[in-house]
Image (cartoon, rainbow, N blue to C red; front, side, top):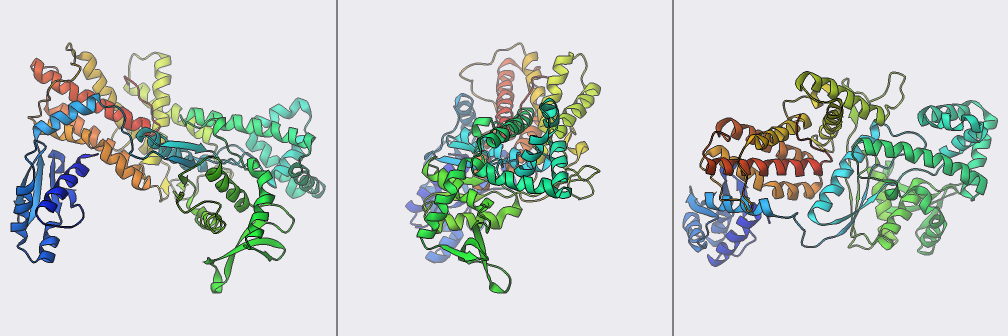
Length: 570
């Protein structure tokens, strides 16, 4: 329970004792919230309903409060209740938090998180950055608070495009096969070009799709060679970006191939299937197109093939029946909103998932260049994600060379990897998830402002401070001295970590966590400037060192939840 929830609970009890029968009051931070000031609303509306004097009613609520050491309360204006947390409460709460384990939710759930989901026909590109980074933060936070997230990497390894890839791979000589597959992007472009320009090759490719779906063993082995190489490429990207996905989390489209025909049969038995121009479709009243015409949800094509909607339906059914998910989250681009709505609506109409299984789409915008256009190379190709990651490390290394002296080559490389990769991920997560954003190297690698380098620098500054002290911090911690306003503000911000996590979990907007960490780092810098540590008397120095250590712990935890590592020096 965070501070705000605790205050609301105590005030709700006092309001009941004062004769006010209504939901818990809304507690909001006042303009001086950084120093532990809150304001409670709800008495004014209750007084109007009860036809009582609002100030007198507010005074009765304050009188009904117990005599806690957590806060003081007083009536202000016509009937507002101002609340101030006490120093003793903050000091006690800090001591508890320093010794606390990870928070745990009251009702842990099994939550499938569908994210990253690259197409294995080619290498991962920058368009996969948002789903991968946003989704990985979701599973990290869910794990942190006690849920059981199930990582579902719904990779595209099945479909018409694999016909041309396999036909071309089949033609390649064994001696050149591995060399050609070393650059999947180039391989994909050559195969696609052959498909467009060579009629005979195109026919062969289409025939390969039929053979593959029918289970041809030789073609299946060739397909598996391509998939293995593609997965290796993807894992290299995940490892470079510190993403928690592994091959064990891959739940490819091909996994559901055997369930597609039975799925269509089930829909037919339920009377949900209609033929439309030879294709098998589901028509639901809530989906209308132009002129109020019903939009089809196609589950089988005219040629007998299965579109993405059928595969996603099978995956959804699998996630409920086999994975036993309580909730399913889709970290998928905003352009897929209609598609996912249809998938979920058909699944519910067919009772593939029950009403108590929650589904939620977490859409996101595009990554753009400085000119506001999609991020492409000069020749129009997608920018490979591994190239972006490696460039980030190189740029960070060049910046650090001018700032840091005396680092070994090994240390310099390691710090550059943490700073560079952290900068990419933080720049992504610091933006509102639903909007497009400009990919700007200069901004994301800056050591000033709301950036990963700034937060990492704040963390290393604390570690340097602790190393320089000759005192040993006590365990359990001593009472904190919060006499300076900067100490009090920093203490309170540390205690609001759980509130930031609760707010994040409302809609999985990572910018909430980023802004919290940025404010925490800024308050530490102010504390560092106004509250001498190493020159303070021993008792004060220990208190301030403990407060600094708590801040470091909070920064480290918060960055880890964002998938960003830390270093001890920079």
